[in-house]
Image 1 (cartoon, each protein chain N blue to C red):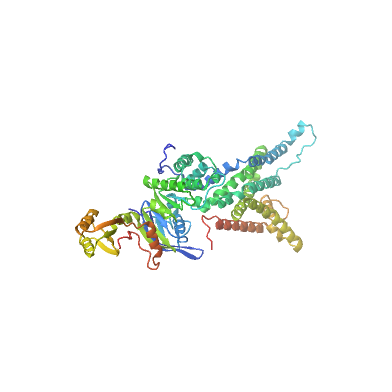
Image 2: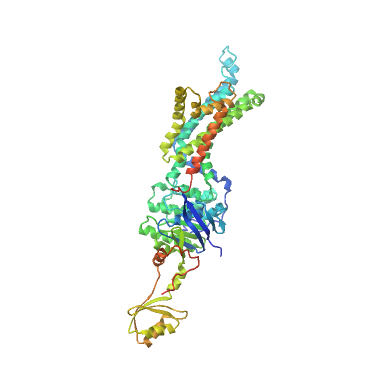
Length: 288
Length: 322
């Protein structure tokens, strides 16, 4: 019906499948996010390190040919492409992912809570779980594009240069890149959403996200120094992730805490975030 | 006819307190008004129907769908306009209404088309590319209405739709509600403090007090009943005039000096009263249809004893008593 015919009429056309509706939220969120030039520029900047790592892989795999070109005597490449190389890549991208999350995450739920938009979402055939998954998908897709996706591309490029025998022998590296990045993404996405739901003020939520990572790490170190213990590391999220990544990338250097304890603490953090989201993401707040 | 909303012993607890108590009724009119003082449970009832609050005891059905077990299907038929400001930050009205339509299940292009239509329909056509956050209160109310109707719901729930509106904006909202009612494709539940809004738009009224139904009224039946209910001021009447009226089959009672109230029986017209008055040499100085306004009904309901209240639906017209 033409818009100028201003009479009400119902709708009896096709409907989309229910399972796919959570994806509507990220679609609209990206439209808003990429209207910001700073955000767009930073997102593009996040692809610079993968390009540098790609160049390093190319140099490492073609060192002999390149050495001949410059008539150098050295034959062995100074760059070794192994688990540690990819762990360094992941560390770098994880830092960028954290900054991106601190930029995007705090406004995801807080703006809906501030503007009382939740009753609008939840009065439709759309559950609280779908809402949370939709909001998480905004971060998950964005962060995946700068972490495990380029990581696996680097792995594939190196595999193609080294031959498929290398890739089969080192398939665990691909697995470690994927799992390591996904754990990081899930943790920071959940934390960002939970803090965004808890503190409705966007700037405060962003500051708290930084505090959870850096202040807690400092506090943990202080506990270790004062009490001469190691368990202070358990509240250092970066260290917990590092411990798990070391296990995934099969690095021998010891950690002050066990991987199992790191998994348990991360599991508890996820549970706490989900509990907070379950409490805050409601259509109406009941005042007791 | 299947009721639009059926309350089947519905009780709702919030914060450890029972807010709605054993509500039982079936509502099937095209427009249903929810009335009650602050804290009566109107918004809680609406929230329970949408599935925001789980029933503690009993249940409710929307178009026969149980809100305990089939709330998702029920929600797909509902459009909801909340009482408070509600919008998505940094979004223009078209994107806002389109997003809501898509979440209700419309494909993206159909949602875009419906968003434009809905915004034109409510009168925001010219302002549809402005951010909703920059709208005036009246415009925000209209934007909320647009998002509630964009997906073509079968039941539209309006919670205080005229809150904060100036008289022209209120008139516009009332006109829109009437138009939607008359379009035939939609039932409307209207919760309001303003009796006039309900009176102007609704066919059925449910009055709540302290979480209980204290009165159910079919306004159409009330209006029909009002046409039979007459107040008269006469001169020169004695007891024989009242007896003569009663001999026509009408109930008649003197309510003061020269004042009579009567209920006309079937087949009796006003001309019969004039004829009897002429025969009795009585002058009729004033004659009114006594209208039990919604305000009268509401005040009676508020005065009623809760313990003996909660009349069942379809008890209908409260009138017919002198």
